Image (cartoon, rainbow, N blue to C red; front, side):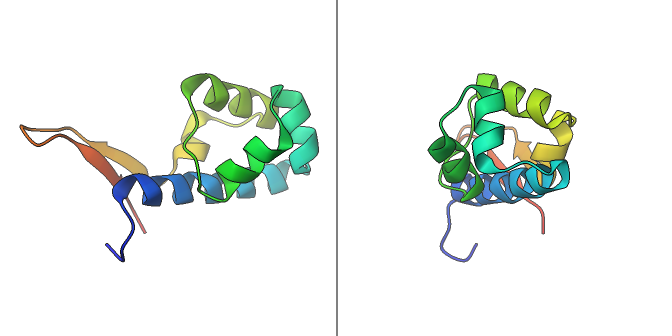
Length: 92
């Protein structure tokens, strides 16, 4: 996988999905942060793929952007684990 871990690839995909959804909604990072009761830097870190959101943050983003959760999770799947554990699968 090009040197990234599966978690990093999932965070990057989520960030891209968030960025596109925010732009479609016509919101700045500052406005989205205010609607979500988050700091603007948190939105930036999420969009840059440097963080994966917690469930409460995901729900805040979905409500503020008026999107379905699947819009932000598009292209990210989880493969259930065996003895070695599961992992994210990021589709091109």
